Image (cartoon, rainbow, N blue to C red; front, side, top):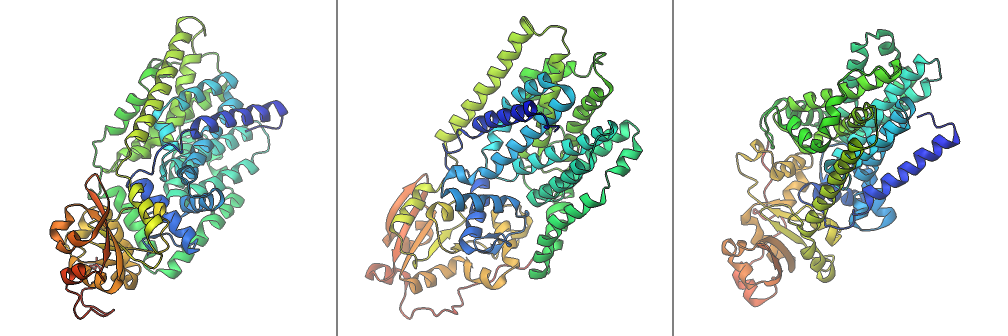
Length: 530
């Protein structure tokens, strides 16, 4: 934080470089994982392809589950560095680098170099931290923003205690909170506010709470966040209700979403992640007479911070592993504090520390290698066939589901048709990809009517299109007998890519294309209303 001296600047820069190398060195080693990486990178690819950098779209339909910062960073990275997996993972990498660097600089400034270095070792030995840094979804990006916001707010308070300039740091904290909101929504502001509020409340420092409501910072926050929300509301009158009521408040309070877990899920996960470090973490709860008042305040922050995060995300029934990432950084520095509370840093404690770090790093590398060898349902092989063999004017159809990563790998120039049970009355009651796409269709019903088809509409589409590429489960040939007459160009793990040429006599007959349907064919259907 206080990097005015050259030695401090050099230490932070050197540490950041080492962190970057460690976090990034295997980002290229595996294809995008489904559904999350394929979904979010695919949206960024659509943003870059369409040139519309305001409205996130999924298969060309407005997608408002999350705000746009991840898509902006990823689209810019793809434009700058090219069409690579590592370029698609820049946003989480930046989030991890931001969270690591901010917490290191904060602890170094207020608790000393040894505590900062030890904490970074624990943090970078955490499998969940490194894997999330290479996983292209929004969790690590918002976690980095939350960590940076918390330490900037606390840093401004501690600077004010010493009578040093602090308003600039506070303004930066408000700006970082705005980036957190643009990364994943209200938690980018709410979580830092809760953590710092609780920290100051426990210390009965009411005046500092009031001082954090710094009007230039609030202006920066509003200037960064409000324009996008206003622009989306002007384009789509239902936007604010869907984004805040459905995707924030209902997701937090309702039970109809995926990944339902018990209340103790996150405490159990964190205990498992920090298992080698638990002896030192327990020592961190013991009073230390060798600490100054400021160091004790920092220690209190590091203890309150993960507790607030864990309780907050344990309240909803839906729980995802990435939600708890903002608690990882303070827990790592708690472990370092517990280790440094010993009177001796040599002998058995030092060896045990090295063993714990070795276990963490080995486990992390092992998991990354396993993921690279066992990619999760990637459609990259099918996409490469499409990219090399398909003409730009030839449409693509997906059966039974949307293959999120295919447009990115095939570099498709437009949306595809998705054949699904869009008339299912339970469609909007289940939290899955069908609901995501149907929800997106509500914001552009004309486009959805052309892209979201029932099974009855598939023959008519194939008849009209000449050559069509169809991707779906290999068993679809039993439901659509005409696919048995199509060219099977790629099949793998129960999925097949067919090339359907309706000019072929056998396919023409199988499709029943006599008297081809017109463009206003009754086979086309609108998605169901919510």
